[in-house]
Image (cartoon, rainbow, N blue to C red):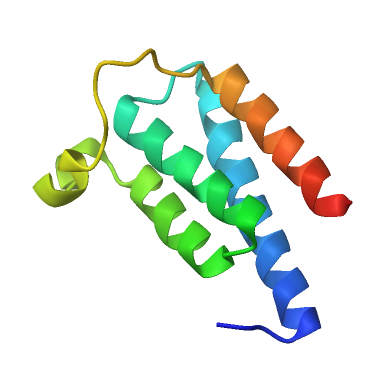
Length: 103
């Protein structure tokens, strides 16, 4: 879906603000993202980088889903057997992605 220039910029900013709030919540609490939240945050960041803000919003909503409300289908899509990224690493990735959007 192609958005008009102003709508495209507004959608990008909205997604960035939501990702910012999501990461900041973990920073404030001192908790780390679990594999599900981390995986869908990485996917939201990839969508932000690609300019697919609708998909980014959907992926961030999945990252925000409390553990007890996650569907088995979505859980099955999360790879296992790898080291989790820390909240600080997610923050750095987000900041690099934002810088890339400004160029």
